[in-house]
Image (cartoon, rainbow, N blue to C red):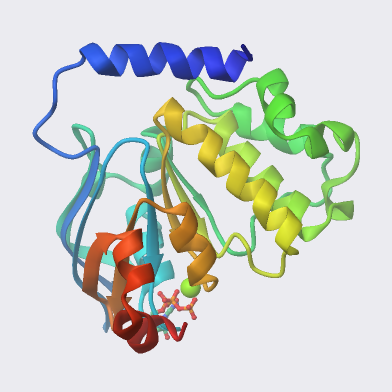
Length: 256
Ligand SMILES: Nc1ncnc2c1ncn2[C@@H]1O[C@H](COP(=O)(O)OP(=O)(O)OP(=O)(O)O)[C@@H](O)[C@H]1O
Ligand SMILES: [Mg+2]
């Protein structure tokens, strides 16, 4: 049994004896966020259970990136109303660095890799943050491509490898909620599959993921549940399968 599988087993056992909590693992209640006076996130509420993958979908400009940024407590958009809870922690009262310490890691579309550093230096820099993130061994075991390229400057990586490095950096921190903005953009199907495998493998560890993706079909196949945004409001919330099976919903909001 691999180290990761063992850890997953331990966590699964401890969860089995834990009592059910009333509040979901992660929840947003009536979130309103603004860029200056532009009212963008207009009363979003959603729940995610521990270890679930939620696909956050919707047309261009629907407010997906803004919602992720508001959860990560970036300064823009500004959160003016609503509550964000991760377990018993009031994220809505935090600054972005505090939200990151609480276990919320945002991987933005540009992946924010530090180009002058090697793969390993990028990972080690993420590890400087306090908390119990994955060690290098565990990361290289899950990301063999990064192990092969550990001494390479990260600027020489392919888009897919950079995405893997961005996810590895999040895992090197104390990761509870992973927020991915368009992780598959520009990647070949074989690389998308590799990232899907990794996202699937961290679920039993209790890591929860919200994935925003233009490739809605891929996201829905990976996800347990889905929320569709339309002009900053929740137009649909349900299982991923419900969206895949609903032609009207797909056509109206996802153009698939
Ligand atoms: N920095 C900003 N200042 C002002 N308005 C912004 C800013 N960023 C985004 N917006 C506006 O907020 C709305 C939602 O944008 P957002 O980027 O959240 O959408 P999205 O669903 O991620 O779209 P896409 O699929 O194109 O990435 C859009 O109308 C956009 O023009
Ligand atoms: Mg976006």
